[in-house]
Image (tube, rainbow, N blue to C red; front, side, top):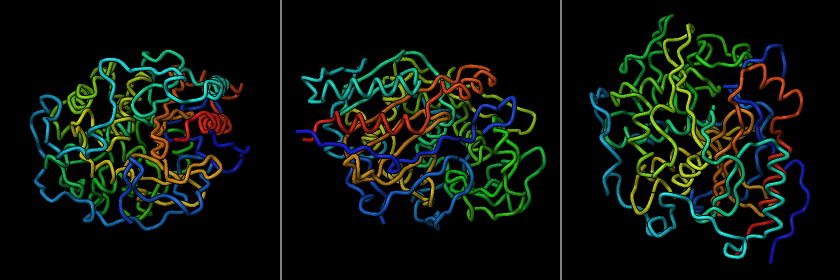
Length: 431
């Protein structure tokens, strides 16, 4: 028996903007939760994210860095990159539930509606809604198997800000290995800028950057015109005190990871999780360091196929476990998804991931999470449904073409996200 879904309008208001928007040619526009669904996240009213993904919003105080710092810490300065996927037991044992879950092998297994229990009509409605929304590819993974997909699943597209969530996995591994500390400061790490950081800015920590609270307001590579205009004044907020979605923070984290691992970020992603997850298309060369004159820190742009994005999402849905192998520490996943910055009128922010309360009109009572890139591309985790939803937007065009496509209504809009989720809620099995 399927749950009837009433039409809804305001239950989901996700941000459409992002700090890595393509430059326009003209002006336009408590405990840590477990992603398996056992954590908190139900009951309270859902936040109503604003139309802009950047800016500070109204933020609540966030937990102290000491509450999340690893027990064993030492100075950062490793000289070699990880030699391969983490060995069994390196980050502890997977939970019995995660260890016993289904995982893809060399290729994803696809189930028919008859085998999966999903409604064929509902999945057809999902695909129709996604195609109307101009996503070029998408996947729905339920309990480790594909129940719906469309588009060129093997083509690598620019992830835009999804790259930041990918980066976070490597940061968590370095911290668990004792190679990096959450409380390490920019001064300790040798992080600076063309216009040298002030004494106060140099006290910003890795923990501050992960939460986009560095208080370092400088132009950054791949920064949108809107963010340049809306950037707080230099020195206006002390490190750790104010959330503002800041590409400088994310780019500096990429430099910190490169220095910590002693290899390119692409090589570290390949060794840290791509091999363990048997990603089918990703290679180290899919991470490109785009350096601009405005900053010493490149943007570390990352291309990834839809089917490989689904593997990364499923890793986080399973609390960092893959085939009974703890690839990313489970506690790091929980700390990452925890809403460190809780905002009114906007989605909440963790460590390079976003989240919001469940949408009751869709029968969703628990928090859900997303790695999100410009123009509403997602790796979305819906733990309550045991679902990973991937929606990919084609951003591999010159900025003026992306701008024109937006003006012509050829890019996804927030109403399309609502339609897709409503279709999935209608299609999914209720057992």
